Structures are given as structure tokens and as C-alpha cells.
Length: 216
Image 1 (cartoon, rainbow, N blue to C red):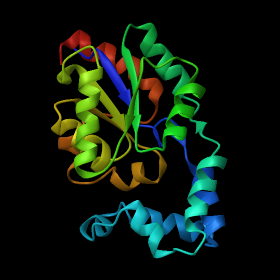
Image 2 (image 1 turned 90 degrees about the vertical axis):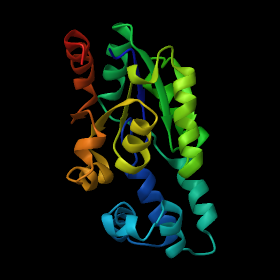
Image 3 (image 1 turned 135 degrees about the vertical axis):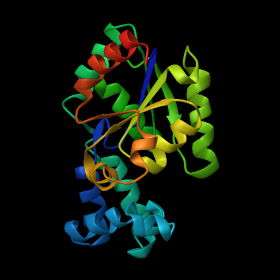
Image 4 (image 1 turned 120 degrees about the horizontal axis):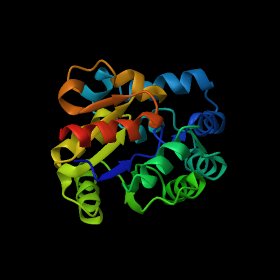
């Protein structure tokens, strides 16, 4: 049974296209080039090199880089994907506990929850990397009103979302969108990390209903 659904923020609920464009503009890097470098951080080569988003920014650092990050955060449209509101609202109408947890800043995460206008049951926290990331998944389990195996975590990344959620005992759903969704889609570890795959959050209510009816 799935009793709780927790959403990642960036590229799961929120379209970050404008945010990345703002970073590129402030750093004086062509937007296409910036996107390509950022995508490399999640490619297999980037993973092997243990690149992080921070190190990618450092590789194109200029003196105003810290200001660029601040400005990108402040000016980010935090545009929700069109399916975010109806998908989350439909789950809550079914009696499913809905949470939000992601690798956003506090402002970005709160904005996503507020703009969703469907009153998520809990804004669980921000997802870090490594040990901090593991702790946030434990925080999700503590916050949710059910056991870990009854929580479905939805995200677009294998490294920061699906694998740590699965390691914590949760079920997982991969959504293919945003740069990382397409980068990770055919990764050899995806079949073992994702219980479900969706192209839209609108699919989740029916998916949860079917899973609960089948007892799987």
C-alpha cells in the first residue's frame, strides 16, 4: 500500500529553465554552453569524476559568481509544471499524505509549496548530498504518517532521488523531464532503482490506486 507521496522540487514540481538561464547570464556564459556543462555534471563521465553542481559552477567561476547564485535564486520564476497542482491535489483528495523535499534553497522550496496551492501536508526539508542527503530521507520517514515502505518518493534523478530513497526503504517513481530526466532515463541502474516511471504527475493518482488495489 502507498499511503504517502513525497515530491522532489527541481524539475519534478518546478521548471528550472529560467533559473539556469539567469545563472548563465550572470556568469557571462552562453545559455546553451552553461546547460551543456551543467548536464555533464549528471552524465556518467561527470559521476565518475565526482563532479557536483557546485564544482561545475566553480569551473566557470567569475568574481560575481556568488552574486549570480543569489540573483538566480531571487529571480527564479519557480514556475510549477502544469501537472504539479492537479497531480498533488488529486492525491490529497484520495487521502494520500503529500510532502515536499528537495535540493532547493529554503526560498525555492517554500515557493514551490506555496505556489502549488494544494497545501502539501508537510514541507519536509532540503535534500543535501552524501550524509546530509541520507538524513533528509530519514526525516521524511519520521514526518510521514506511515512506514517507509508505504512512502512513494518522486524525482527526476537517480543519484540524489531514487537511490537514496530506495536505500531508506521507500518506493520510488522516476519522472522523465528536465535535463537529468533524459540523462538518467536509460542508465543501467534505473530498473533496480525505480518502482515506477511516469512522464507526468497526473499519472500518479491512478498509479497509486492501481498499486493499492493489487497490493503491490
